Figure 1: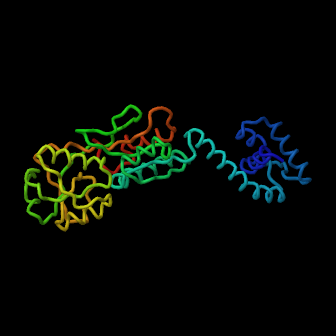
Figure 2 (figure 1 turned 90 degrees about the vertical axis):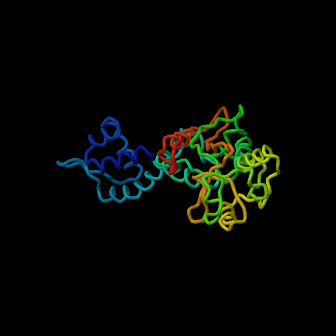
Figure 3 (figure 1 turned 45 degrees about the vertical axis):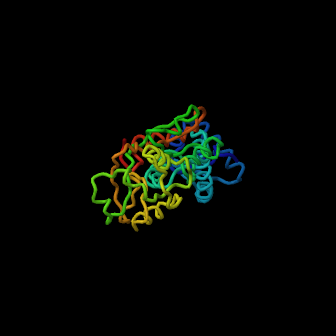
Length: 301
């Protein structure tokens, strides 16, 4: 027995004639007849019968067709999966992302990608420096990262960045604080204010804070180092310190607001990043979805 014989029997069942089955399978009628005879010979049973109204399956043929239909369907799915993975250039696409924006951009984009291909997607969370390290080591194929416009750290020859979103950095303060009532905040007045820093010294907002503090001649005080957005919001909401953030990263469940600074804090650039050179086709498809706006819930730059 072989798969062509199974497909012929199922086509005869569906179309009710040898001619209809041949047309559907793009075979000649003699080829259809040959496959049916070979299958009947192997099984030692008559599977089809010709009548005035066409060709139909015998009770044995119907029983056998019901069993093989499930197997053929599984084989078809397996063939399609292999074709999808071949065309996508990868079996599993691994994508790195940072938490605040990844939760808004990636889920819908991944859903759109999986309507196009059966390639699996695995998401790894990390800060931009960690994502870039994983990209260079081959642990991920692509990632979402952010950088600051005034002193970009990832504008390097081995990376390809496609910008998805641009937002100005602002100062996060407690909603009921005196700072929230100001139209803008001057860092010259913040010498004694503690700040929430990232765990990595290379994180964009930390570099902004250090740059502004140095320009005013004082070291920025550190309250805590954390990448937990809930912790950051909670500390600021209680008036324990400040943080740098952007509109897209704000959690409305916390009593915090953003205020612009007198000094130039620059903008946060959110980008889709891959290594220069050979990139899985599926990573390119995901980039297209993100850039087209079919996946993101946030605004375009």
